Amino acid sequence: MSNLEFFRKQFVNYLRLEKSLSENTLSNYLFDLDRFINYLKEEKKIENVEEVTDKIIESYIYYLRNQKSKKGDYYSIKSINRHISSLKTFFKYLLSEKNIETNPTDIIDAPKSARKLPDVLTIQEIDKIFMQTNLDDKFELRDRAIMETMYASGLRVSETVNLRINDIYFQEGILRVFGKGSKERIVPVGSSAIRYINLYLEKSRPYFAKPFSEDFVFLNFRGKFLTRMAIWNIIQKYSAKAGIKKDMHPHILRHSFATHLLEGGADIRIIQEMLGHSDISTTQIYTHIDREYLIEVHKTFHPRG
Image (cartoon, rainbow, N blue to C red):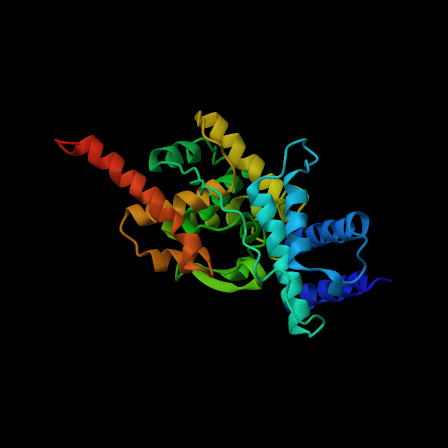
């Protein structure tokens, strides 16, 4: 076994046991690392980490730029940056364990890309989507409770599907959420979402629940917690019924949550806390959205706009 394979196994154990990463994030790391190791072996005939230099890393980035994904497209800057981030984490780990003397990724900069502002919904569009649900239908009442909760609290899809009844503090109007890396945070949920969660728990969930359902809040008809794809389908369904033409995905409710808070005057650091962003720079993208909104308001209402 090359020491590349040996250190790969150690790194995987480190990510799984010490960093407590989700399986999805872990899978991304492994995909990126395995592709790199394969490149080292096949293209450079390298078997050991000590042979990897910054020039090798640069050649690998150039190699990626000229490769196509399974869809037939060239790798985007975002995809390449993810590969670089994975390699930086790997070599930083090796350095911390004293398996290498220098980190070959130290001087490697990620390619810069134009920051794409996420799509957001207006308050009117949110209302229109939510009004498409028939509250007399057990499934649609559940769907309304899901969308109300995601918009009210800015939850990620993974946080929504893993939400448990014991994580809802009804009297206080707050949720306990476990985000990326199992980081716990407390977020307000609001009276509207609480109302629909209560209706769902009273009228729908007993219909779905099975002995093995545990206390997951949102269940499918088999009594299991919903998948990420199921949430995506729910957003798509009611957006189509409402005639919304934007690029609809579950994260759009999270983006809208943050944008509407900012437009209402909320402090960006409070929004950062509620979204569970570890770095304020991640949240600051919403200031760009707010700026666009302010410019539009000025054009619409100012006599010299």
